[in-house]
Length: 96
DNA sequence: TAGGCCATCTGGTCCT
DNA sequence: AGGACCAGATGGCCTA
Image 1 (cartoon, rainbow, N blue to C red):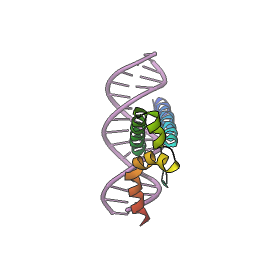
Image 2 (image 1 turned 90 degrees about the vertical axis):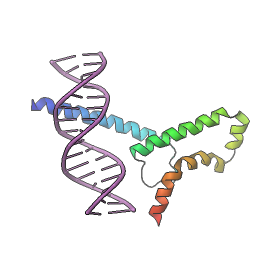
Image 3 (image 1 turned 30 degrees about the vertical axis):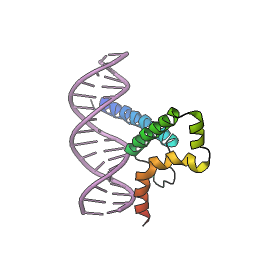
Image 4 (image 1 turned 180 degrees about the vertical axis):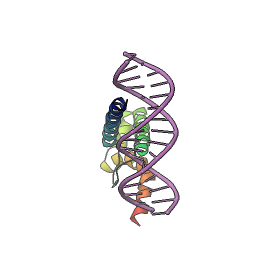
């Protein structure tokens, strides 16, 4: 019936709302420095993937190597920069 | 104005 | 049976 459909629609809306909240949480922990537009869902997943991969790479290194890699602020931004190359390029084009 | 991104509706399928 | 999950269709909004 129409009532049932409307209820199903409402549930679906709530479900998507939960999904989008999860995306927002992910956006917060994923590096996206100097970004004026929020990451799209696709970009968020790509960013999370490359970020996890990068962190995994750091874990493979010895503590001293990892420590040296992130010893100053410029270096800690290294991983973020790497992940953001494509999107920043897009934003730079936007600037011109 | 075309393309990208998104929210919503919808019907089908799977799970409880 | 009824809810959760999913993917296709559709229309709106924004930007290059």
